[in-house]
Structures are given as C-alpha cells and as structure tokens.
Image (cartoon, rainbow, N blue to C red; front, side):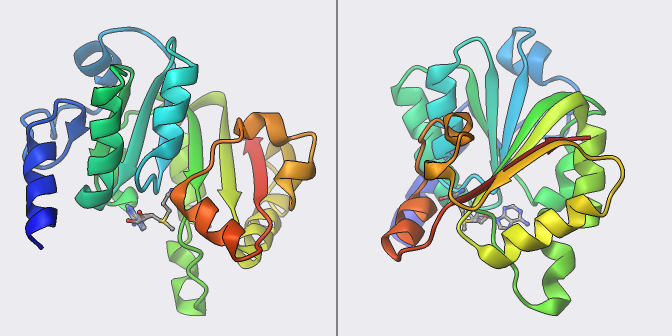
Amino acid sequence: MKRKQERFRIIEGLDNVIEPTKANYNSIKGNWRESHFKNNNPITIELACGRGEYSVALGKLFPERNFIGVDMKGERIWKGSTLAVEQGLSNVAFLRTQILLIENFFALGEVDEIWLTFPDPRPRKRDIKRRLTSPRFLEMYQRLLKPGGYVRLKTDNTLLYTYTLEELQQRTDILDLQYTDRVYESPLRPECFDIKTRFEEMFAAKGETIKYLRFHF
Ligand SMILES: C[S@@+](CC[C@H](N)C(=O)[O-])C[C@H]1O[C@@H](n2cnc3c(N)ncnc32)[C@H](O)[C@@H]1O
C-alpha cells in the first residue's frame, strides 16, 4: 500500500503522465502534438499498456514517432513512465484513463496506429461488450484513427483471438486483415519487433502460443 502511494506520488510529478491531477488532463484532446510532444510526428497509442513495454521499446526504435501508453492503473503506468524518463524518451507518454473514455482525450483522426497488447479477454458472455475488440470499441478506433491507420492486436488468448477474427470477418469495412496464431513462426513476426510484455512472458511460460492480427478500416 505504501509502495503504491509512493508510485502515485512519483507519477504526479512526471510530465510524461497525463492523469486527472494534471492541468492539461482536460485540454489534451486534439493537442498532443502541439502542446505535449512539440512536433508533428505520427502518434501510436498502446491500449491496456500495463507497464508500457511496447510504448517504451517502440519509442526507442522509432525516435521520429510519438507513443502513448493508456491504462487505468497508475501503479503500472509508473513503471513505463519512469523508464521513459530514465532513457530520455521524450517521444513516449502515458495516459491514465478508462479506455471507454478514450474519445475524451483524442480528436477525430489524431491517431496513426493502435496497439492492443494482451488486453483482458473478458471470457464471460455478459462481458463481451467490454472486450477491446467488440463493436463499440472498433467504432471508436475508426473515429480516432487517420484513414489507413492500423489496429494491431497481440494476445495469448484463443477465445479473444477467434472472437476478434469473427467480428472482423463479418464486417465489410475491414482492409488488409492479416493474422497468425503463432507469431514467432510467422512471416508477420517482424511487425511485432520481438518485444515481449510482462503478460506475454507469463503466458508464454505457461505454454500459450502468441497470436497476432492487424487490419485497417
Ligand atoms: C492483461 S494486462 C496487459 C498489460 C500489458 N499490456 C502486458 O501485456 O503486460 C491488461 C491491462 O489492461 C488494463 N485495463 C483493463 N481494462 C481497462 C480499461 N477499461 N481501461 C483502461 N485499462 C484497462 C489493466 O489495468 C491491465 O494493465
């Protein structure tokens, strides 16, 4: 508990974390490039980022792009945000919010790419609408993304993977859908840059294969 409070205190003092305590929390929408990153570079958001392994690793690989990890748990964001500061990655930021509220923080077409990294599979039938690839989330992604911007999902979970493929395949507005249930044995592997998140490490240790799919609208 004490450690958690300490981490909350630390992220309160970090400029790369946008959360309710920050002055720009209600004004960042539509202004990420101008007021936060101070460049005009493309923006990738990582939803359900946890410790933000993708945001930090991609930020290092692509200094000419901006990355924003999004999660509701401040304690997890603490990890990615402090790492980004230690590594001098001014192109990496974190947003603490419920993903359902994401449109309060990004304007239409403000985002170039969306990564979903091991989101909770929400296996119960009554939770289907909470899956990050359920129709209401797909509609939101379509509004946030620039035309042609890719959505990328990495998961260990067969149910979420097959659910998502079925959802996408029954729509008529999905383009360039590519998928694999074994990304490390697939030609799609380079698209994931071999970045391993905490949950990927945990699931892989249990023998789960890692699934990946991507598409744009
Ligand atoms: C299984 S973890 C994956 C974390 C990280 N991407 C990884 O692969 O290690 C799922 C993450 O989603 C976050 N999360 C779940 N539902 C969320 C929501 N509705 N809004 C924001 N974050 C959410 C949780 O806090 C958690 O950090």
